[in-house]
Image (cartoon, rainbow, N blue to C red; front, side, top):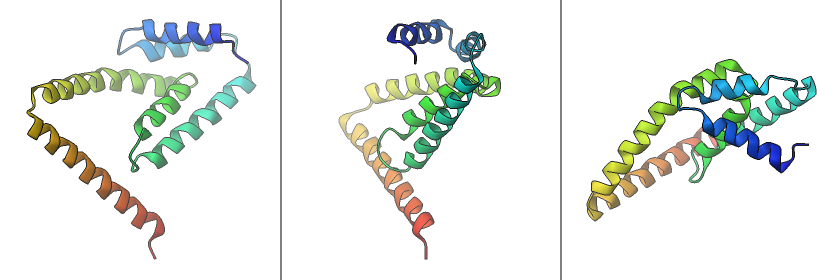
Length: 136
């Protein structure tokens, strides 16, 4: 079992990397001296968390965050996942910065319209998912 000190060290290692190469660097550092059982457990837990996040995506809440955590665990074990996250991260950071700027520049009425649009989209996704799963 990892100690809190090890977890903090791993987080600092991941955080110290530049966006666009941090996950691959972290993958390489994690491959040293790990037991096969630990790798299998990490893969199973990562897949389970990512799958749970995918199920939660249509529902309001932290579905995207749960998927990201699952993919982060998988990036420890699979180079292809680490490289994909390295490609996605800078684009995602740019989109979040753009959205934040748009939010700050928007009037209260514009913000209300954005929130309403998000609620309508989330509601439509939830209804669509429900019908897809429980269709007669």
